[in-house]
Image (tube, rainbow, N blue to C red; front, side, top):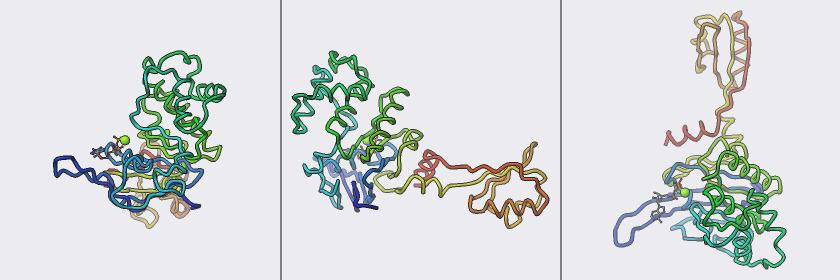
Length: 307
Ligand SMILES: Nc1ncnc2c1ncn2[C@@H]1O[C@H](COP(=O)(O)OP(=O)(O)OP(=O)(O)O)[C@@H](O)[C@H]1O
Ligand SMILES: [Mg+2]
C-alpha cells in the first residue's frame, strides 16, 4: 500500500468514569490502514468503537496507547486538518442561521475568506439538493435536510480526506442514493473517503476497503474484493446425479440439494472444474453453473457472530 492516508497501529482507548472505578475498554489494540484515493468503510455493531476511533483520528481526544497517522501527521495536526472534511455522528448547527450563512461561517472557521464564495456555496447547496431553501433557518429543517447541510459543510473546502460518521443517517432512500453518488464522485476525483455506516448493501456499492470492529477489537480489515472472493462459491445445477455423489471425492464439502426439478450443488469456486468433470464422468447432465458471490452483509454478520 502507498503511504497510508489513515493509519492505526495498536490503538487502545479506555474510558474512565469520574468519581468511580468503572472502566470501558472502547478500543483494544486496533490496527488498520486506508490508502489514498480509497473509499474505506468502517463497520461494526452499535458500541463497537467507531465513533471513538474517529474522534481519536480527528484529535478530539487521545488514545491511551498506539500510533495514529492521518495524512502522514499525528491526529489534530493543523496541516492534516486543513485537508480534512468531517461530518460528526451527532452534530447540531446554530438553528437561527440559514444554509448560506452557516457555510460562510464554516469557511471562516476553516481559515478561508468567505468573501466571493456565493458561487461555491450555491454549488454545494445544489450538490446536496438544498437549492431553494436558502432563506429557511436551520431550526426549521427536517432531519434529512440537517444531514445534507452537514455533508455540504464537510465538502466545502475541497478536502483531500473526507471522514463521515454515518453520513446517510436520517436520509430517505433517494437521499441515501444521492449521498452515495456524491461519495462516488469524490472517489473519481481521487479523494480518500473514510465512513462509518450500518447500511451495508449501500456501502458495498462504493467501498474499496472494509474495516470491521466489534466490542473494541479489530475483526477483519482488507480490500472488499478479496474479502468477498474468499467466500466465493459456485452453484451447479445437474440432472441424473448418482446417489453416492456426496461421498465421492468431488462431493465431499459440497452442499447437495436434491429437488423435484434436479439437483443443486454448491461448491467452492476453486473446485468447480473437478466437480463438473466428476459429474460428466458419472453420466450427469450439467444444466447450469453460476457464481455465488457473498455480500458484505453476509460477511459482516458471519464475522461479528463468530466473535
Ligand atoms: N464519552 C464516553 N464515556 C464513556 N464511555 C463511552 C463514551 N463514548 C463512548 N463510550 C463507550 O465506548 C464504547 C464505544 O462507543 P462508540 O460510540 O465509539 O461506538 P460506535 O461504534 O460509534 O457505536 P454506534 O454504532 O452506536 O454509533 C461503547 O461501549 C460506549 O458506551
Ligand atoms: Mg458511533
